Image (tube, rainbow, N blue to C red; front, top):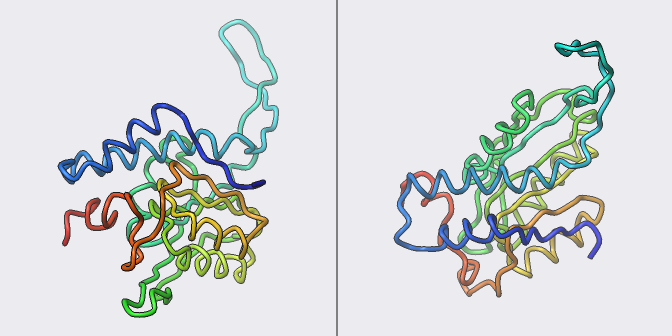
Length: 209
């Protein structure tokens, strides 16, 4: 489907397999999430606009391309999305960082917002929304609804693992955004966890239960 990009790079796949392993500890898990986000960001940001600027090399002056305006915003969905931010910032250190806090109702599995802070002016920025897991898709849809309400237009969503149900729901709700996926898994279970997945990404990043 147009606007859904499954990243099949061998390095991404290898690192995702390490993430899945239940014996991978917090420190290594956190580092892997960051590395995968950087590799995915390299692909997701290939359409950032460039402009020619004059630079003096040791030989002569020349016009050479640099990022135009540096208007990138990274917006993690709290809390697991935070784990992916530094990977993208290592590529574009000038990016601004916003935050969207959502919690999931344990009965209905539907998201509720509890915090939102977006860089201004949001409408001029390329916005990368991060969340390691796209499960039911409820949180991602709600977060992007909110960003659009605040004026965000050029939006990309980046997740490391997606369930088909969540990917379909997000694409149906927001067909205009680009969705970058590290691996498309089999399905959701009755508790709305991705199978085979990797468990709770937030707990594994932050060492909580």
